[in-house]
Length: 449
Image (tube, rainbow, N blue to C red; front, side, top):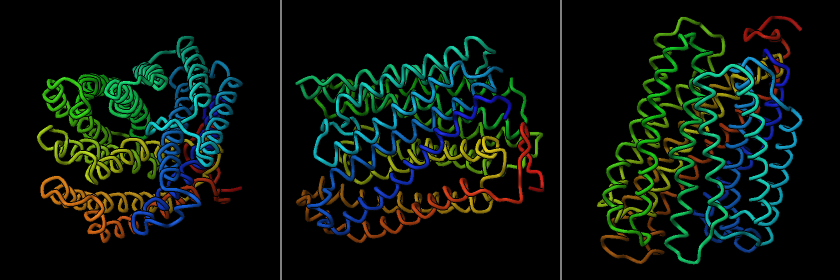
């Protein structure tokens, strides 16, 4: 660690890991309710559990992005963070908003729009926190050295924050409501978050492989161009059946097909950088997470997204378990695994010792990735059967759900593996090994106490 203000990232990572644990446990509970629908139905209804599961996912990923930015921007800009005090204020606002949102959900207060259920005061709090972050990071970058990584990261984070404004727009017309809703949900995860992902992945590979910066930057700009080109008009695949003009069926189908390209490029980029790399970095776990993130993202966001993005297929498959299969694998690969890669790389330097066991850390990768892959296959089979029985044959929804119970049981087992892997990751990351200390400014463990 080269700069004292990078320690701000440590507290963001701790908060993110705490929410990560809550999020996966909430997902496991939701998975069991699919097996036993009346479980906790009066004490903790399914809609509340689902809100906590999805909202915790979004918030901890954002905390991870913010923490990654506070860690990498000083190194890239070659100067301290403009105001560490503002960074801590931002973190407090986000945590208070998170606790307030969960408390509201538990007593039945929410906005009713999926992913955007937060009460109005929480939405304003998130906006204030985003403005603080943008000012802080922008001033850091503008007063220091500028690189392709910081340029792309800033672009992604600015667009991410500006798009949040659409969360406040809730028109009475349902078609307009859903259109603005997708401006946040789609353009976050399939456009601006991809820029953040590309920048963080580029930083990690630069540090872990020792490839020349010029090579990394060329790849980065190509990935960004394809992500924005495909992602913006690719929003049209959400406009098929919500009352918008019919031409969106063709626009959405064509540009959604191109959305596979940036994820394929990111996967290729990661493996090419490792192949060309000259550095034998000791942090093998961080490299595993980086390669795993880009690979699983290609299959989850790219391949599984393409499976049901054409309007002729989507007419039958939308809203089925096929969507759930795509969503779980895409989020895990593109953003969950990426954040865990950053945490694995940064924490040894932030704590100036090796606070993780690499063997346990890598075991957590295989547990989580294997569990998520199995869950994806199970949900894909379930969704295919559901599509045929419900949308083609026309059987009653609840009868179809009952016939899928064996798949939901397997999904719960896969979810249990993911939870065990997540808890193992948290343990391996936060429990220090007393026999290894990392010298300040070095990534190499030094024997001794």
